[in-house]
Length: 271
Image (cartoon, rainbow, N blue to C red; front, side):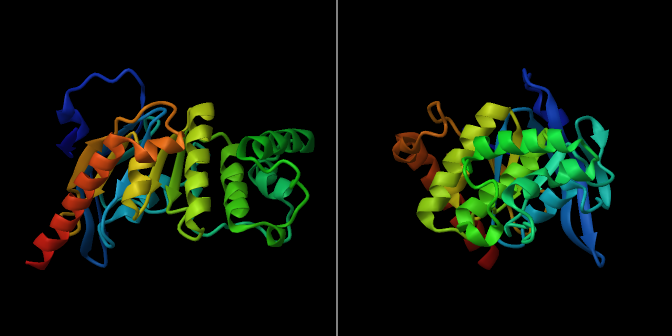
């Protein structure tokens, strides 16, 4: 099912799960030039939303507003019912780069946010060990980043974000730097971890296949349309982490639909 993006208040559909992110006519200007304009959307608890679109459409800008790294020029941005005024522990960010401290072990990298919060060392170690097990890094607790593969580094970065138990995880093309096989494995791990933790995920990507496999919904942002986006509901069998979903007829159909829509937006822009 595909729909055009509309302000949350206009949707008029009952949702059983509470809203964790809400943007109402959000805009952002850089040097007097609009990058986003009148963007309205709503994201619910326990939902994975893939954000797709051409370069320059505002995907990362959207993520940075929700993260609190950028302040909207207009409109209202809310996280867990509170206006976003800056970064907060309820929103964790996983970047493209691994962003690990080279001089820290896997265990200490994961425990870093808890250390900054002044939590007891015993609690830091306990939570770090739980996260190590959750992301599949058991046996590498004492390893340093240079001793890890790219996929393992990204798992460590993911575990560090999860350690602070955010209600929303914001992911900015986190698997772009790894090989195809590792990327697919990490996609499956993300869905497994999401199912285990109930964390809401906003996932920025340039890959149509990744967007379809991961998302409960896909937002295809339009370059030049500022706040305009096209929305797709993804209806794949559970468990969503099953790699066989990449062969499912609905996956193939939706991948084709999104591909054609994305190509059409490029063609319209060139005309």
